[in-house]
Amino acid sequence: MSNNMMDDLEKILFSETEVASRIKELGEAITQDYTGKEILMIGVLRGAVIFMADLARAIKLPVAIDFMAVSSYGSTTSSSGVVRILKDLDEDVENKHVLIVEDIIDSGLTLNYLMENLWSRKPASIKICTLLNKPDRRKVEVPIAYNGFTIPDYFVVGYGLDFAEKYRNFPFIGVLKPETYEG
Ligand code: 5GP
Ligand code: MG
Ligand code: MG
Image (cartoon, rainbow, N blue to C red; front, side, top):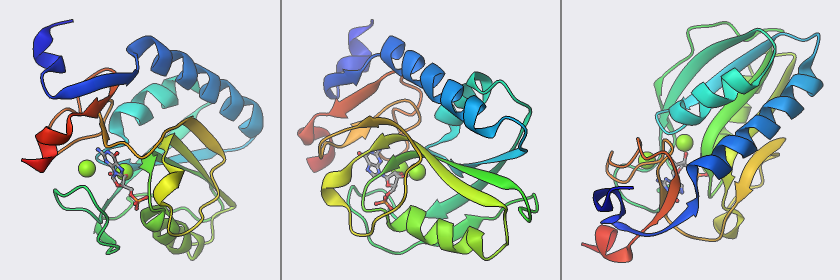
């Protein structure tokens, strides 16, 4: 790998191969659990896009996909606790089996808000699938049905996750050097 990709990173947490094999497992579990049901995957923009694309192809059932954009962070690394819907769904979720796809659950505030919001639209069910779970800083409990990896309180980038919109394209999950975000 080119050194340029490692310039701002302290280390790689999960390699491209590790992520791929974990997503394959998640896809198999979801395929088993939802056989005979109609899945509407809802990706949370923008962080979940890369994970969503790979996860959707690991699910061996016909699925519908839609996206929501919410904002709680701006370009800083700590939660403001404020959740705003920037883009709502295009699809109706009534009677659908909703699978929310997230990049990472940290405080839980974003997902807690989304779950409440989506339940009010009368879906048949809602489950959460997250690539990463960072439980150390949880402020509100959210039920996670499918979890890629549980990680300590690192600020991670890659595989859809950004810092100030950079690094989303990195095909692995890495830890940013503190000096990169401390300025
Ligand atoms: P929560 O509402 O659970 O605190 O935050 C969820 C959102 O915060 C995630 O979807 C993600 O956009 C952002 N976030 C939380 N932890 C990290 C992290 O370690 N790295 C990056 N890039 N984003 C994070
Ligand atoms: Mg997210
Ligand atoms: Mg972000």
